[in-house]
Length: 139
Image 1 (cartoon, rainbow, N blue to C red):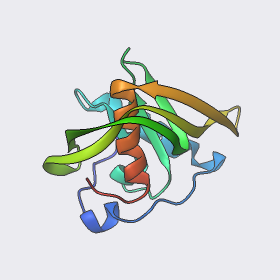
Image 2: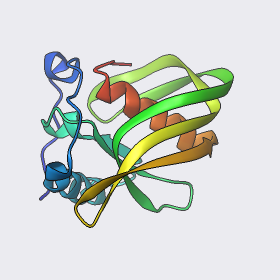
Image 3: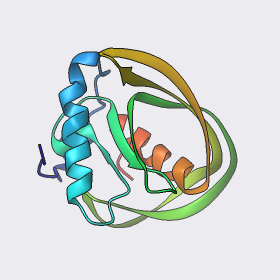
Image 4: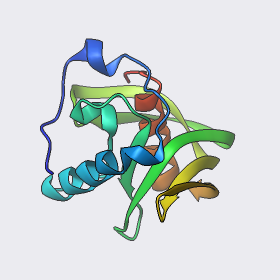
């Protein structure tokens, strides 16, 4: 179901709870919502009012992916950039890493399976942005 975006900074500043396989409906709501927003690159569950560590993002090939409980484990080549956000006004200067290793879980047949992904460039940047959302960190 397409959900309305939350802009309340108090809610967005709260760290998300770990997601479970029972949060499959949250992932589906995120998929429906990202598809409904033109040029949307990524969205986290807390941006639709659900304080769970679930994110959806588009990679460089415009493919949509879901991650449960994402985290960054290794990062290389820091750089400064400006980022905007769907749920905040304006742009903010942040430090991101051009290459990173991400750990997450993927829902397969009702079970969360651990995964690891190496990303560079744009995908690495938006995943870092989404992990900040899960931690309640506002850019």
